[in-house]
Image (cartoon, rainbow, N blue to C red; front, side, top):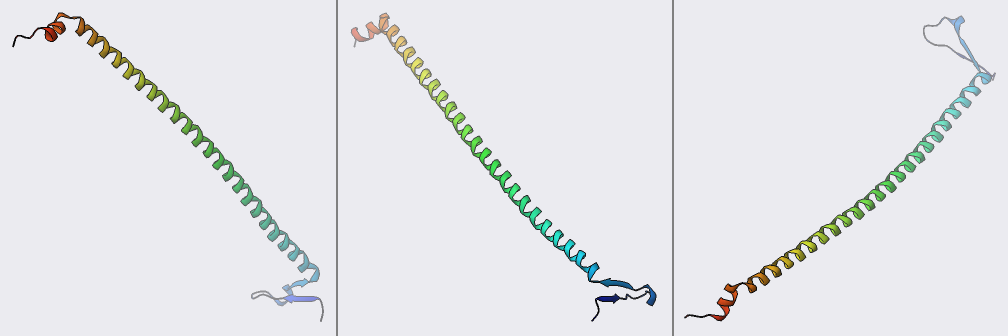
Length: 116
C-alpha cells in the first residue's frame, strides 16, 4: 500500500484531485492535539482563577459582615447608654419634684391637717 491517498470530491475534475499523504496528515493531528490541550489547560486555569476570585469575594463578605455586626453592637451600646442616661435624668427630676412638693405648705397641710 502506498503512502499516497487521493481524495476526490464531487464536482471536481479528475485532474484536480487533492493529494494527501502521511507528511500532510501528521501536522494536522499535531495541531489538533495542541488545540485540544490548549483548550483544556485554558479551561482549568480559568476555572481556578474564578474559584480564587470567589474565595476572595467570600472572604470580603465575611469581613464586611463582621464589621457590620461590630457597628450594630456599638449602636446598640450607645442606645442603651442614652436610655440609661434618660432614665437617670427622669429619676433625678422626679426626686427633685417630690422634694419641692415636700417643701411646700400643701404637703405639710395634707399630712398634718385633717378636718374630717
